Length: 400
Image (cartoon, rainbow, N blue to C red; front, side, top):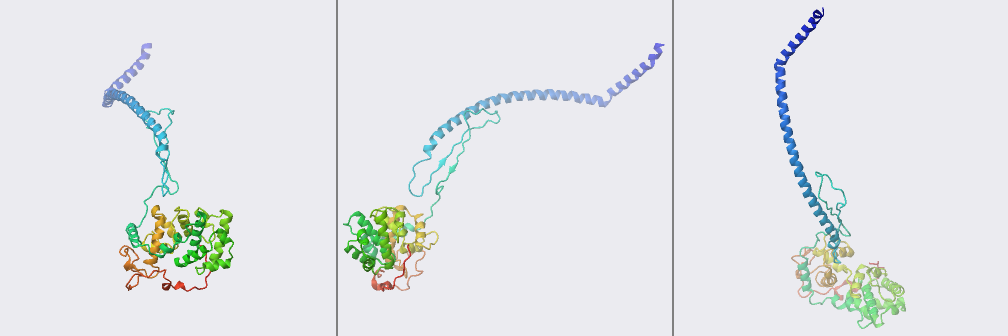
């Protein structure tokens, strides 16, 4: 009974087994089995190669880490030495004219910082920053092309020293035997009188004042009418009487009877502008603080092309000249150009045909007279050659 019941079950197992055997023999199972074996071989082979490459890389990484750590220690030592010497190396003393100061900041990694991973380990970085002070980094200075040749020609034409400024300028009008403070005061008064006035007239007025013992106390005790008669006929003489009295009182009250020894102090005095202040510093105090630019220096500098851009006022010309002209020439250039403007480079009808700079001057022959009379040119200081010998009614003068 039991055998009969198990017969169907056995037949079903036999059927399933046969079907499975057929399926396992099919190409699908045989191909998949072959590919699986190949895959296992490839995996084993690739795993060995990767393991070998990892071992080699780990050995190379260890060597590289040691080398980089050694290089990092060397760079940090150099950074420490550089940080100690940077202050001395970059703070050299500079000259007084047109120089700048450069500061260097060194930022390095901290010595106590933990080491990074081998792949991210880097050398210590140095960051250099330049800070500009005042003018900033030095730039190429502009200067006229032929100015040295032109200046040498002007020196040659002025070698005789026969211009009015050479005989009757501010350097010739004070009493050399007087005390130092009196000499300085007389230099200032001669500069104040010379504004809008020819050198011959200024020298005559200073001679009359010196005959009255020109000093601070003398001017303070002198009435305005007497002072006006002594300085007449200088230009704007009434206004100058007022300025001289006010400036003298200020010198006595605030400066102890001596003229100020700074440009700022001199310009506080009534009637004293930048030109007078710089000339007074040069002549009275023997200190060159700037270029004294009057109408001659202003005119000739623009004619010669010594100004990068044409200027309208003497003060603009002074600033433009001081940007490029060497400081050791600041005192000489006023004397040279003033006499040159009085004899050759005249305000009206310049004598370009007699000038040695006629081939390099960009303004040559533009306003020169067509015909030059024979003989030496008349000095513009000649009273017969100037319309200003006729004294008219002066008008109030504005401070320079």
